Length: 127
Image (cartoon, rainbow, N blue to C red; front, side, top):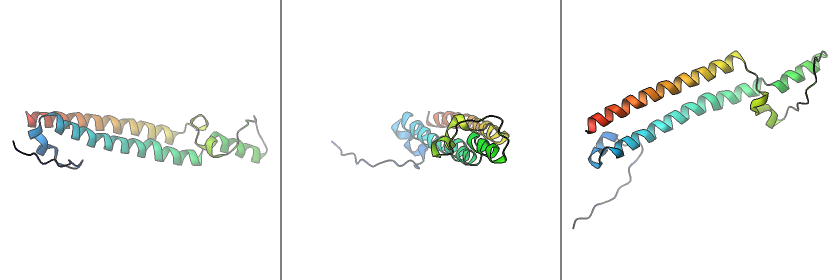
């Protein structure tokens, strides 16, 4: 009986070279690769840019601006600390934040369409 030498398969491996293992292995590695790309896009879009927008503008900074100007229409108990600065409830819905949300949604949608097309092409190649 022959000995099969086991080698690890890297994420950057050409998925078409794994076709001898069956259809599932290349599709799985292709799925993992695209999951990493989609997560990176989501983190870049909603995570990093959303945090930067929260640093610059939130409801706590607006209240402190009103209080420092002398004309406060309503007093909100809002301390400008770390947790309040990044809390979603204190975020200000601006045009920039809305544009980023729409851009992120469209980017994820296009990535999913491209991923599905690539999976269908890979499945057709293997069969």
